[in-house]
Length: 140
Image 1: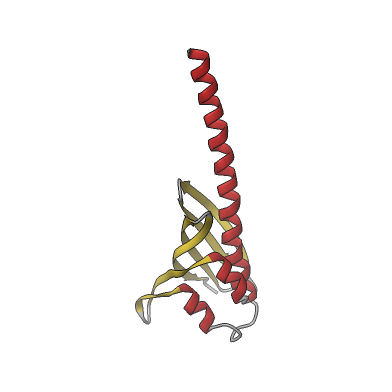
Image 2 (image 1 turned 90 degrees about the horizontal axis):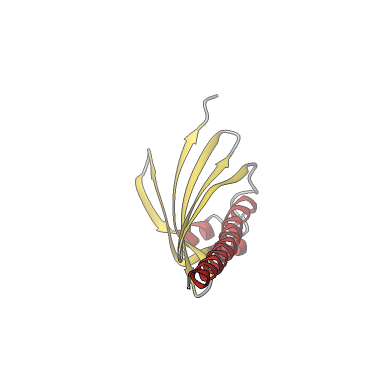
């Protein structure tokens, strides 16, 4: 009985670890669709990352609290801005079942943007369902 339990516990642990690694890779891929799509101003890549009802929220000194549909916001600037000179980094990814979050740092020559992405595994695919962010200007 003890050996059976140990084998089942070990197998369950291995299966869970494999599932987590698989989910981690899928989440990372989804986040990179966002990062590459935003950097290259490629709306088709951005669409791969976001759920159609995903929200984007931030607070600015001029407008205060702002909320919008993420894909609509990205589509509105499609073709209006050139590819950006920036460095992208995923700081962490946390997974809890079918939900996850990721912290991203985007470094521009004059500013640093920190994005917090919330993701859900919907019909087997990880999608960003909400993004909040903050920008800090670098001192010259």
